[in-house]
Amino acid sequence: MLLQRWFTYNAIAALTAAAITVLSGFVVWKERSEGYAMAEVSVANTAVVLAAQVENSLDQANAFLASVG
Image (tube, rainbow, N blue to C red; front, side, top):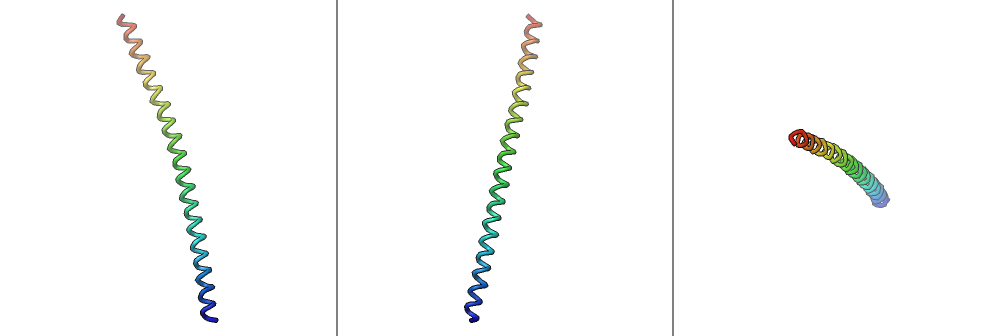
């Protein structure tokens, strides 16, 4: 009877550990997905700002060349 109770407790402990492991893995995966999405948006926003700056620089150079010519 004592051995059966020991196996039951170990089975419960193993199932609890497995559940915690699965939930932890899900949380890590979800955080990684959200972090990747945020990084993607950040890169897109940076590209838009950089494109605007380059366009502004080209407009200024064009205006300068037009004034010189």
